[in-house]
Length: 222
Image (cartoon, rainbow, N blue to C red; front, top):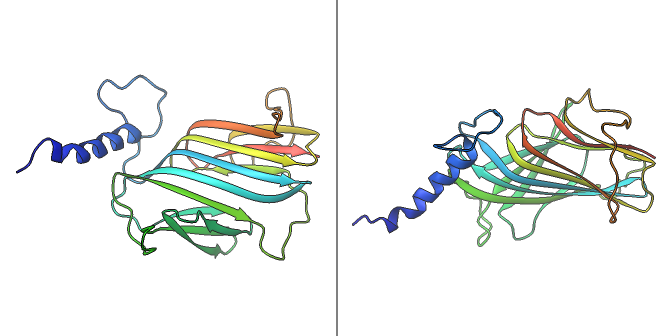
C-alpha cells in the first residue's frame, strides 16, 4: 500500500532539483540567468591553490553537485597543466586522467560505491561530493614562477570560491577578475581590480551563478 511517508524521499528529491535547476512558484525575483534543463549543477565549489616560494605546490578542489541528467557514469573536469591528480581517499569517486592533444588534460571522475570500490552510475536528481588534489608530477618539480590562478565553469555553479595561499614570499601586486575569456584576463592591477591578502597570506574570490566557460581568479606580479 502506498502512503504519504513512502513518497516523501522522492518528493524531496524532486523539490531539490527544482530549486537548483530553475524557477518555481513564488520564487524570489532574481537576475535572469540561463535555466538548466538536465545536466550537472554545481551547488558549491571551492578551489585552493598553494604557491610556495613562487612555485605551484598543489591545488585542492571540492565540488558539491546535483546530477539532473539521468544516470551518469562519470564527471569530467579539464585542466591546462600537467599534474598528478588523486581523488579523495574513501570518497565517492575514482579518477582516470587522459591527455587531450593540443588542449591539456581531462580528469574523468568515475562514481564508485565507497563500500565495495566498484563503479556505479550516479543517479538522477541526486547530490554528490567530489573532492580531489592536483600536485606536481613526481620528478617534475616546477621551476617557472607562477603568476596566474583561475577556474572556468561551463556547467552552472551557484557558489564558486577560489583561493590562492602564498607560503614564503608574497606578490608585490595582486588583482582579481571575473567573467573573463582566456584572452581577456587582466595583466596588471588597477584601482578597480586590485586586491590584498588576509592574515594567512590568502586571496579569496567568491562568485555566484558562474557559467558560460568564462574565467574568474587572480593574477599577480612578484
